[in-house]
Length: 321
Image (tube, rainbow, N blue to C red; front, side, top):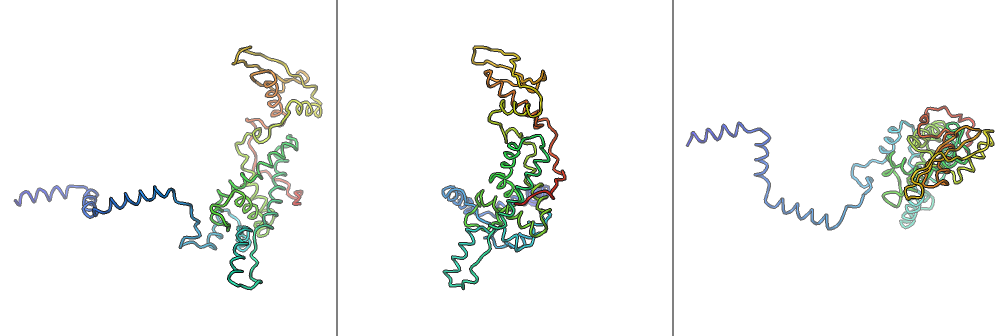
């Protein structure tokens, strides 16, 4: 009997340490654990997905430390009271004032600063720099195109996208959670205004360049601005630049009188080919060729040189409104 015990002891010692611990752990798992876990999973599936909760409700949350860390992550120096004001929505301020009234607090303490003024200032700074940046980066694009691209950069969707990726979602004081795109965009504009008051307008300009203007990276500018009447616009541009009269010419076709018909049209001016385009009919191919010619004239083709985000924009001439 002792021989078999010795053999069993050798086999146990020969086992890997992890397997021995696993066997011991299985011995200590109670029989009620598995049914309990199944019941908890069933209840969670029945209730549906858990609603997102703000991190401000966590025990270890320290709002002042989060504000300080927000500025350091971005490499900026903010005045913390201004930064807190930038993250306070008007709806939240009204809600807190109403709570104070119900508690009978004196009228002097009712006023809570919100981010309306900082957001207006930040919006002026952002628009001024974006317009100056586009004017210097895309000098051949007409003002209509520059305005369309600027509208994309300053739209609520773009600003909310930038704001959420900078980590503002849990810092915003608002009556809703998660914050709406409008609240995210407005808070980002207020952060720009707070940075201008804390470190100067030049730092705010660089902030706009680094986080808003860079949204143009790898973007097809024709998706952001598509002229409604490209052939007419091309004719106007050619007249302004004295390139000659615009003349569309049919270069080729295939599959004529079939559902797979394709036409190729070229746009000429003074015997120079400006652009080519394809389409299922001649008018569509002509419009496509006009767009191709405009891309070449405005230097916004897909193979153009990437934007130079280190470009020194003349900020002295930027008007803040």
